[in-house]
Length: 169
Ligand code: FES
Ligand code: FES
Image 1 (cartoon, helix red, strand yellow):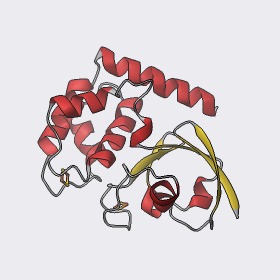
Image 2 (cartoon, rainbow, N blue to C red):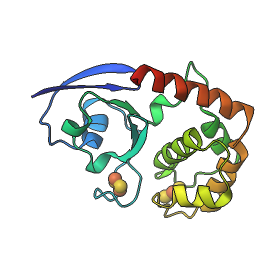
Image 3 (cartoon, rainbow, N blue to C red):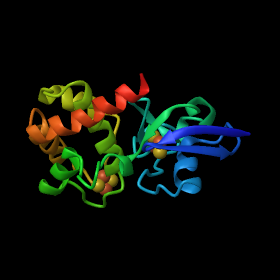
Image 4 (tube, rainbow, N blue to C red):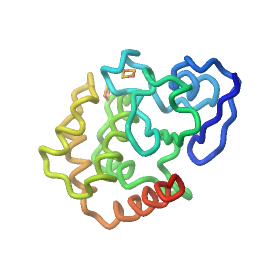
């Protein structure tokens, strides 16, 4: 069955069964390997992407439910060769250890800051609760998000998010 969706700004038409998990589509069909498989049942957050501006677990989101939608993966956060402010902060804070969970972490953080540009620490902890890290990088994740909250570089990234939202409306 032919289904289409937009991934990181590119229109994609896919002849794949509609009950295929979005994660398999991204990784195996489109070659976007930045989104990771962890638990496979929606519990760890490693596979988090944005669907129509909302964070979703792509392991448990079927292609047919994403059809016609706008998907952003970790590969789509950088814009015009410029890393997203959160990606810069992740580097500055040296957040990753093994790195496996980190694309999902960043996607959840990006949604938080797109909806709440100046979150309190409790807001950050609450927003990131569903993203697990076996390496225990939680304190550096919070520090990285706090370093971006309210900064001018985040305003640039928010301008990008707002432009994407306008395209959807
Ligand atoms: S792999 Fe999707 S939530 Fe764990
Ligand atoms: S950095 Fe290793 S699981 Fe999070």
